[in-house]
Each structure stands twice: as structure tokens, then as C-alpha cells.
Length: 480
Ligand code: NAD
Image (tube, rainbow, N blue to C red; front, side):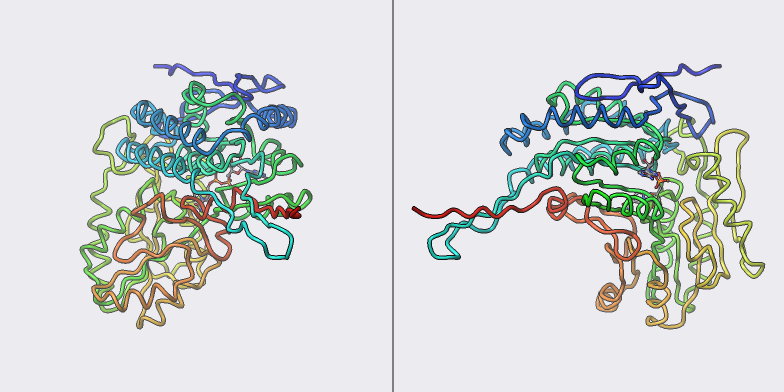
């Protein structure tokens, strides 16, 4: 049976456009390998067009009050709630997410927009007084102007929302460039948002990293680029943004350790790894891809983990709600994941998984690798797939050294029944998020999300993110 292919256009200045070249790019369902949509393959000319539209919309938008922006963001949140099941299905088909996982992202995305609706009314400058005799100084916190958000393929709608909420709340115009593989929920959301937002305030342009993402990074009218993506993409963007000295906000890769101290509950740990390591097929920048276990409970944790992982149901999310894990995003990604396993040193053991599965789509069995050492590639580089490595340690100090011993610093967790011990470890872990007796959740809109070290800089979510999207101005008034 052939699938109906939807053809999308870009949303620019409140209107819908094909790419200037007329070219499109296919969008594939990773569970089947079939093309399900075509989207515009944007060009440098399309970047020029979207920036011009954003510039046109800016003066009116700058004139809107925080209250007006709040009301629009609240209405956008309602749009997600009202269309949650449609967006869930689209996300599931485009990313290969089990329906339950895609559905789980909808209320949080709506909540995030509501949080930023409120945040719009909290902006302040902290001075209005005389610091020099005869002058009153005022600090104004202002929007930057036009900002661009460049998103990855693992949580397309949610990452778009994380970039759109603070941008609009602060009074900026937003241009979003979704990932090549997963533009559908962003484009559909734009259609729905059309009823709510004034034209040109929110724009979506699809295409390849170069020229579209790169064009936004180099455009002098754009004041901030916020990327969620790979470390190498982040470094390239930071270098290219230097020419116009625009602000860069980088949410990059991770290699999150889960530190399991000797008094942890092995059953709780195995359940936490099932979620932390394999949620979204392990394609999560905070996935617990490195399990560090005290040698005293190593065997117990590993055997429970194998049982838990082998019971996971892998398959096409369209086959039913009981699927635990779908495919990885593409054939290329599957080859990348399996490549890590092919390159393992002979000492390492693939305890379970380690191969692709199914006769269509891009499935990889949930995989556990043991007998690894700290310098191994599998420990040092982000796989971004359903693979966790398990290492043992002899003391808490040794565990923290292993945990901190990569270039990444996005997230980590500690498992222990002794909260004092867990807190002592949390203090020493060099990561932007540390969970205790949990991994991956909870996400809270009030809490900042962002990395240390090569996982990037700047924060998504929380009032802290408003600092990325605003600038401070000192106005000094000579008194008469
Ligand atoms: P990617 O870096 O390949 O692509 C991300 C986006 O950047 C895409 O939209 C792409 O088109 C664009 N891009 C690529 N080259 C560009 C360039 N030269 N200039 C401008 N834009 C460019 O990442 P991906 O493969 O889509 O996503 C996976 C990565 O994202 C993983 O490394 C993952 O850890 C990371 N990630 C991080 C977080 C976080 O919050 N820190 C969250 C999700 C994903």
C-alpha cells in the first residue's frame, strides 16, 4: 500500500512559500523507511526572504505589551492542548516515537509556553535612581530583535517550543529552522499558530544545515542563534557567528553517567536505566549512556538490567500502544550506532542486543556493553542510540573521577539510599543537571536546562533563559 505524501511549505511573514528554487526534500518515517512528506529545500534566498519578513514584523511586535505577549503565548499553549493527539501522531510517525512517549511531550510543551507567558511579565531592570548627582539612571531589559532557533531531530516539537517560548515572551521575533529529518510537527504547529500570532512574529524555514542554518547564523540582522544539536555543529556555529558577533546559545551533546553507589537499590536502578538509557531509543542528550556501578553490587545490577532490557518490546509504534522502543531516526544513524559496536575492543562484551532487528525501518536492539574501560570510544563519545555501557568502580571517589572524565557536562545522576552521600557526589559532578535516585525526569519549566564543558553554554527553560533572549540598556537622564 502506498502512503499519501503531504507536501508542506515554509511559513514566512504569515504566508506559505515553496523554496525559491522549487526544490523539496523527502521526510521519512523511520519505522517503515517510507517517504511520508516533502518539505521545501531552503536556499540562501529563502533565508534573505525570512529575515526580511521578520524585519517587517518587528516594529509592531516591539510595541506590544508584556500582557499582550502573555495572552498570545497562552493561546498558543491551548493550540497544543487542543491538537495534542494529532501532533502526537505526527511526532510518532516522523521520529519513530512510541505513542506514549510522543503523547507525554504534549502537556509539557503546553506547560512550557504557559510558563513563558507568565515570564513575559517578570522582565525587569534593577535600577531607577540617582547614582551620579543630577542624573537619574534607568536599566531597561529589552528584546534582542530577530532571533533564530535551530533544532535537532530527537524532540522536534518540544525543542521548537523551548526556543519559541522565551523568544516571544521577551519580545523577539522568532525564526525556527527544524532538523532536516523531522520538520513536520513544527510546520503543522505553524499552521495552527497562524490563527493566533500576528504575521511574521513566528517563521519556519526548512532545509539543510548549510545553506539554511548557516545562512541564519551569518545574517547580520539576526541577534541570537540558539542551537540544540551536535557538539561539532555548535563549534561551527560559534565560529561562524563570530563574524557578526551575534549571541550564541548552545545545547549540545551529552554522555550522561549514572553513578550507582554500593547502597543503591539494584531493582530501582535497573528500572531507571530502562527509562534513562532507552527512552526515545536512547536518542536523548541526557540519556544514561554510561552506567557506573559499585563493584559490590555490579553483578546484581547487571543481571537485573539484562532481564529488564530483554523484556522491552521493540517495534513500529503504529503496531500498538505497548511498544516500549521504536527505531532510530535513519539508516545513517543506525549504521553510526552499529559502527560503535563494531569498533569495540575485543575485551568488551556485548551482553545483550548489538544488532539491528526487523525487515524494514531502522531498528536497533536495546544493547548493553560491559567490560569497557574509561578510554574506550564507547565511553568517551556520544552514541545517540539504544546503547549503554556498564563500568565498575571501587570507591565513591573513583566513581566521580570516571563520571567527570569525558568532555561532556550535560547531565548525570547518583543512586544511593544515603542522601548525604548522594549530595556530596552531586556537588562534585560537573554537569548542568544532576538527578538523585532518578534519571531523565522530572522536567520542570521553572528549572534551567543546559550543559557545562563541551555540552555548551546558556540555558533553555526557566527564567534564566530570559537572560539569553534579552539585553540590558542603561538610560541616563540629566535632571533639569
Ligand atoms: P545536528 O547538530 O546534526 O543538527 C542540529 C541542527 O543544526 C539541524 O537543524 C541542522 O540542520 C543544523 N545545522 C547543521 N549544520 C549546521 C551549520 N553549519 N550551521 C547551522 N545549522 C546547522 O544534530 P542532530 O543530529 O539533529 O541532533 C542530535 C544532537 O543534538 C545530539 O548530539 C544531541 O546530544 C543533541 N541534543 C542536545 C540537546 C540539549 O539540550 N543539550 C537536546 C537534544 C539533542
